[in-house]
Length: 371
Ligand SMILES: NC(=O)c1ccc[n+]([C@@H]2O[C@H](COP(=O)([O-])OP(=O)(O)OC[C@H]3O[C@@H](n4cnc5c(N)ncnc54)[C@H](O)[C@@H]3O)[C@@H](O)[C@H]2O)c1
Ligand SMILES: O=P(O)(O)OC[C@H](O)CO
Image 1: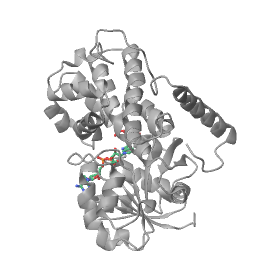
Image 2: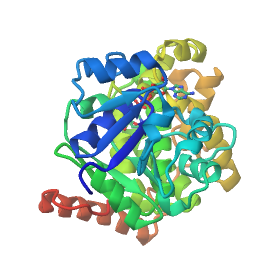
Image 3: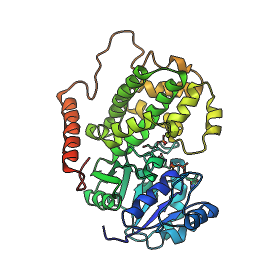
């Protein structure tokens, strides 16, 4: 990365603000766009975003504005972190101010409810830029932990390896390390699907069930995630990496997760109406359940856990009943089938993931690598 590369971040919630800090701490020249002028002022003047990141001091080099034209002027890279349902309208507003040859990076983990589209495909549809200039970032990335500079990793994915590497260089610093891959489908769906499993985990937590139930849901949830993503063209290895298993673990076990929290409230008996009212921040999983199930049906993929989450949201399943039929409604004993119908490829994928993790640890985090 050329130090001082001009970057814009759109969306000054928890993740947009945290990511702006990651980029500044990596040496980029960052302008953060906030919808509300008072928030832009708080970030620029007090170096705080007290609603979203309490107790965090933001870097001196971070500038913020509520003027989209000023944020985007001359930006070579634009990172987008608005709620997924608002991406399309925000891109339309941004388009007149985008520099030629700009690279757009999605930080979001939802699908568009009305179309079922992934965020990178919405970007591709709305903006006149080639897919090689679009990237997505995903991984075990709870914003508040990263804003406090606790070390973590993520995956930058683009159909162009060159773009993924350029973005990964920007998004790497002493506490944040970016790996690269070219499996955009797997990387994006990993981020979307783990939210749904985290809602299920929250529900059983709220009911009062313990670790066996949660471990069963996480393990079977990973199978659902992998089946779904592979049916849409993803590589199974991606789902065993940071953007799949890694994010699934972080989101399912952290009380910081909004999806997990929403699930817990449902498990405690609150209605979806009450839960939505209580959630102050973006909870992508709640909007993704229906479009994901529609996509799954279209490909003939069974998603019993996500289906049960939908029933709890609709009020047609008592949260206490979510556990007993985790994998199937059939009373016949089933094979466990983990990754891909028990073919040799599944164990090879898992072995590959373990080996890569080992190699990365041995490497000591010195270079941008494939996840
Ligand atoms: N918070 C995290 O830990 C985290 C980590 C990784 C990815 N993400 C993803 O990042 C995306 C953004 O989430 P977040 O956590 O920053 O949410 P958030 O609720 O903390 O912030 C969302 C921001 O978007 C703004 N906003 C709301 N409606 C808008 C609209 N119509 N147009 C423009 N801006 C609007 C809000 O004012 C707020 O500043 C989500 O897709 C989420 O899944 C979040
Ligand atoms: O707070 P959540 O549930 O949106 O999860 C945040 C991040 O996606 C965790 O990686």
